[in-house]
Amino acid sequence: MGNACEGRVALVTGASRGIGRAIAVRLAAEGADIAVVSRPNPGMPQFGSTAETVAQVESLGRHAHGIEADLSDPAADPAAIVAEAEAALGPVDILVNNVAGGGYRPFFEWTDEQIATVLQLNFWVPWNFVRAALPGMQERGRGWILNVSSASAITPQGPPFPKGAPSQFGTIYGGTKAFLDRWTASLASELYGSGVAVNAISPQAAAATESLVNFSEVPAALTEPLDTMAESALALCSGDPAELTGVIGYSLQLLADLDRPVHDLTGKKLVDGWQPDALPEKIATMTAHREGRIIAGEVQLSSATLNRANDPASS
Image (cartoon, rainbow, N blue to C red; front, side, top):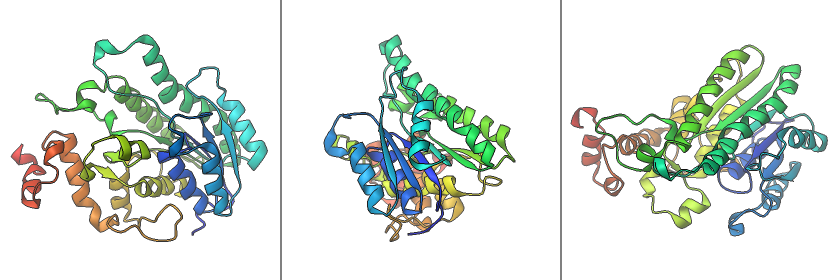
């Protein structure tokens, strides 16, 4: 295990499982104490809980504090959550806004209530956590804010447009994530030189969360392990704020660009098949699928076919 986050406190939302838990554990492996924020009694408890993430962090020799809050409820108070985390662990140096809501629906199937919930989770929650944590970071002259976004924020190109839910039905989820990306970039610009970094990271295509692995039929070629998401998050939560800020990045591409070795969540070993030299081919396949140049059922085709599909001149 390394010490890139030694002596720091991180607050991670949506951290009972999936990407949030992976990031929390990876930061702890690098020396951070972790405030774990998650819903009380989340659905599908077999996949994780606040207490389980706390236990994982503590097993790495770090302090952890669990805070259960339903952030989809506008009555939830991010300022109070930050205050509780700081009372338990010390000033928050790293804020990871991971919790999110969404789904893909045709335009006329969205209700006002559903839209309000997605806006609450994808806009107001991260906005208000930043409002609460940023003043202390500015006062201390150091801090790292990471917003977890989605490739659904990328505007579909057409006509003809790619088929699939993100392109056709991404009005609300993709729209809120695009908004998240945009204000991340502006806040990074506003704070540049203050010692506070502000970045956004998305899975390259789909992260292999517990629910995706158990309930989806996404082909393996369009998924990445949680280790790569956590490693890219670590890079953005420990880098020099004078250089690594304003990034609106995608996990595998960021790791390739930084030529950064990918460790498992505990930081003890490298992850086979996901080191920087193996990433360009995976990125090309995922990009070609998102742009509609290959479809999900074709991602297992031969390398020659994939090479043709990944060549823009062939589309």
